[in-house]
Length: 552
Image 1: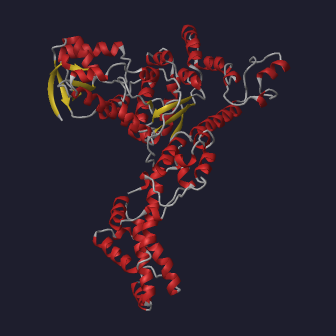
Image 2: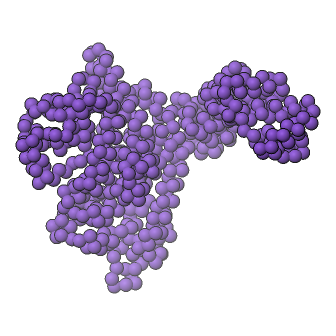
Image 3: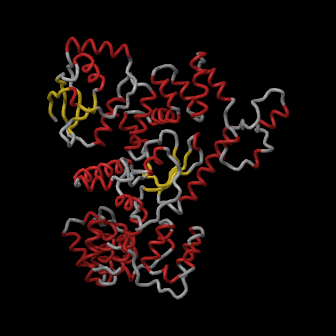
């Protein structure tokens, strides 16, 4: 990091979450800069083309431009950082200033949540907020652009915006001008919005039981002279509970197809992005194929009032990774010859335009590999440990050699006393005395040779169970562990993957060929039915076949 000056006109604008600059305060700063210059340097980062981009200090930059023009030698601190680091720093630097509007804080906080892969607790920690404060700010992300702008410019109060956030953007935009023109208080607005609450027409759940319910406003209109009109539910708790159940049911139905399915709520706007192969925001065709197999690829179910219950397929839930893949694709294209680059850019991206409109994707792409999701990795490692322990336990001499090697390579810490103590108690008929070395040594001296060997095997089994995955992989390779002797396709594994990935499994093991014309019919059924069919193919030999994703 270094301090320097740069010609103001050579500094490119950055991504500033602050959109509103108080005119009076800006005028004061301009006069101060005109008289004294810029005292505190702005923060910039160098770009690959030799230019520099602003990271923090836009008010000072604006004031210097107004007071001294583009040729002003702007004091800067130059720091090497990538786009992800620059965005994070700019967001947090701005959000920690006390004059930022709650609406601007909401947008910035939502981006931080996205950079933290949806982990709101981590985002709150980075921002120095409580979780309650973070959630309250994120709820504002369901406000329409006009409501957020009104809050930015202090035309309405935070209480107004919090009330607006519970309703559709169309409703907000209709009511906002009236609130501003007539100067409605927060209490006035609450009264207005209560009359539009819980619309049964907008409900996504089965409304059969609502017809005769006492909380249906249609029934109230028949009984009372004063009512809030027909088509509304006055029992918000019941309405919300039924909505949540329907959202959960929609998400559950997508899990046969996608590794990751999330219900998107206000404030989660930046925790996902439509996966695009082409265009300015595309990761590239080849990379997108790899993304389909990633555990962070999936579908979103909207819990937002404007799109309640809608499904958005083809979503990437690791926005940081997506950002880096897009940057890598752009960098590689810049390195191509001009002709090749022109050819590769032809016809870009209907997909990108669709992504901007947040239109639901028509269908999920077919998987080309089985995703190495956390669930599959856990299953795979458990298989390796079980298979290696089974083989080593049958050879006392081998177990002794492996135990010596484990200790000699500094892995003795992986040995847990539990398995040894269980066998010790069974062979000696007494629990080991914790901390009493003399008693334990005396008891061990009474062991017969074969029982001593059993205890040594138990220690080795404990070590195999405790070593880290990298060390376990080395052990399996040295042992030349043949997984085909220990594994065949089972229900436990198939339940971890999607139906699309099951087709990859069927091709790899030869099940598609064995099933013949019945294969396509089977995959038109539910996931549980597909699993049953794949595990019961007449005449198919399941033994001796191990999937690539399970190998070490």
